[in-house]
Image: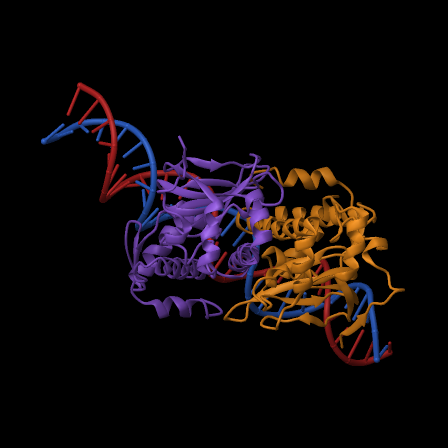
Length: 242
Length: 242
DNA sequence: CGATGTCTTGAGGCACCTCAACCAAGGTGG
DNA sequence: CCACCTTGGTTGAGGTGCCTCAAGACATCG
């Protein structure tokens, strides 16, 4: 079951959280960040595999990840589902439901995960007094738009190998930002989830991993990925065919 | 060439624009709408085929359509491009560049088009005094996120015929909202543009139009579409295979 | 009226999917 | 501690949905 944690004086606040350079406070002065304590009054622990929220649930907050990984996905009439995003520590998700008061996607923990809760009405009042916060919210919203547009291009215009290459390079960049190695990292999602995200089947995804390994682009050990030839991956994105 | 029009006393303002029920003022009281005159001080005419803006250009405004149609698209390293949206009268676009100050997509007029210009800094200051405006901006941003997520599902999980059916139903709904017939409307985009948007080639798109016509779902006369069997189109989305 | 862009239709190929078997790793219970 | 099961991943064989290439029909417009 998911577990709510109320924050008190001793709790770690945004001001000294390691993830400030990625998360909400990004780009704010230290006196502004102090005020974010008003914003994050609660954290939630979600065990691996559990839902933080589901489509249709009342929405009154957005979330940033303290530890763990979250996937968001949507579904349609015939039960087919599409993963719309993977989120790593420091990243903010749940933005799609900010204006409607209802969640438009599901959010599931891919491993034991803890998230910071920011209530939308607190966000509205505080960002009115704190222009940098308003600006940061806008950055997050437009960032999400831009990311989905890039993903549209990936699904609409790229071949399978290019989609996977672009996925791996994206993950590598995000792990780097977290202070991990850019060469070697452990993915938290299954082949099926990667495939779903990229509009491919799990078999095609698995075959691509094998092929990339055989061609010396990467080395895989289950979900641990080692990037051996980053520029080759990058060049894949530049080729028109084959 | 595109042409800027400064608005004066006699110009039509948001308060008596026919599109208020779709556009920016949507859901605002009449006294709030009066203040939007401060926001829209300018309109721009874009002839068919011309760019309103390009990727990388300085961005300082978002736009709503008064008359005409706009497509937005992005491109990647290898020159492949992906249409990210079509926009009809009353609809607001250009949101992806709201926070960065730089356009992240191209915007092209599919026919002679006139747009209302809302400068982002005016928007920021006015929405601070006018909470309903702030809320409307958030609605637009999250609406754009939600729309791209739906499109991700379309590209990632649906077969070609389902993508086209869903496209036609979406267009029909939007034309209806404009006061046009929900059964018959004239698309402003080519088969190639529809295909690009749906992640298909123009030939596949054309074949699908022909097939839908042969099966009595629609009737086509060039870009004029008549929907003959709406529920059949809808049922297409519910089928798992074939 | 020709010229040009847009759309349609056909034939063939290939990238990715489907179906299916097998394997590896980890957990569980006797 | 080992048989057993489960879950996730790999690999193969065959099928097909969509793409590519190509030709022709239609609109639209100078």
